[in-house]
Image 1 (spheres, rainbow over the protein chains, first blue to last red):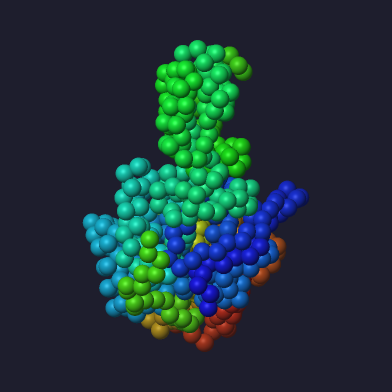
Image 2: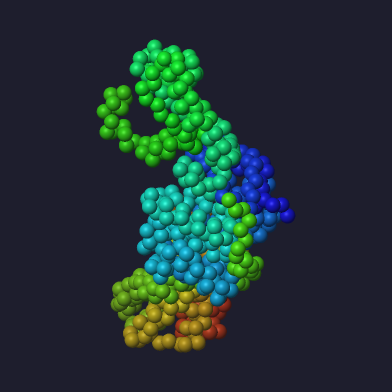
Length: 334
Length: 266
């Protein structure tokens, strides 16, 4: 037995589309240790969900192999299914089903005894604060409540490994924060390994111990959020001067990009670099009028890796036509 | 950061189960909304009751004979209608669950794929039997004579047919995936010809040759014949054998095709 919860080598999925083959996932290798919380970050269509669907036996890979919770996804899909919990992008509970009934059905699906199921369902209703809605139909619940039901269903059999596909998409900020509190608590109590996909940068940044960045079907970076930002993006120090000549002289002295009165330097450990620049430039008689220091975000990492911004892609995907009608500048340009 | 916190023993980890257990689990899940909201079973009775109440009197008038005799001929056809319409649209429930995500959840659970189909198809028997019984009870005050053993046998044959026809409806849903319109188009296109060409509403004996040929290959016409014999108490009639064969064949084909489709479901 390896000490890895998930091991994948060369995992590939291609689909036929309009006479040609589209490679949704290209030769993905990954190792996830017991107890890790890993986030799969990438834009829509990057292949995150397809990878997840292969690891959870929903989709057979075109090539490559993977072992999940000690079972081979091709040779022992039933073994994988017994050991993992999966929360997909949709609503897991049937619309006309009552919450408690669905939990009881789910217990039976996983081969739990009747009493065991009842006890476990009551436990989950309690810990996920579903008591108020336990005897209501799923379709009458709010988005956040439905999501908590999805998680409860995924946890009925105390899986060692929980897959979450875009768990907080479509929730308001309050429900998102609430959902994450629950997930973090459950993990603390049970040591569950969690593997999730997200396109929310802050979510991956704050919650995951490890971030795998995916783009065009391939994993392009894999490390802690801190290390990714440190090695790929660096801190950004911005200095503003009183005159263009001062700015140009400063840029020549310390390096960095010059833009009118502003010099921008990208450097690791920018918080330490900033006072050093101020001293050094002061000694040279150059007066800094304003200075800012900004830590990099995972968006800077994505930008450094792909030349595109995740934030922009999310924004353009969310409102593709909204600006063109209202923005006069846009109308003139068109 | 802790990586190996095994504070709780896996007291509730999943255990391997068999086909019968899985089928029962799916059946129980599917039946629960019916138990919670029994009125839904009665609600889908509206259509058969409309035919019984509005078409029945017209038929009595056209036949010109005794009302009770006409009902004796007509009510068994309505029972087949209950079985046909009730199970033909049952795939829509699966179609909806495929779109919301709850079907996906059952595919990740360690359930036999066959059980996912058979459990659902068996559930459809419950409303069918309840509705069939209500139709018969409604007809009794108007002169319909019930032969109890015949009725029990008649409902049993319809149940076997219903399991198969429901399975075919689920198969259609699995094939249509997100295309609701395709499901309903196929549903509508097949349902009314199947109904009319079964002799359920009007006798086909006086129809043109091609209609009688079409009826001869329609399993529902054998079913209608069998129900008429059974509800009249003629359990040994030749028509009964034809209906039993039609029901069993529908059931076997439906389950075989449906299980295959469910195994391929993604």
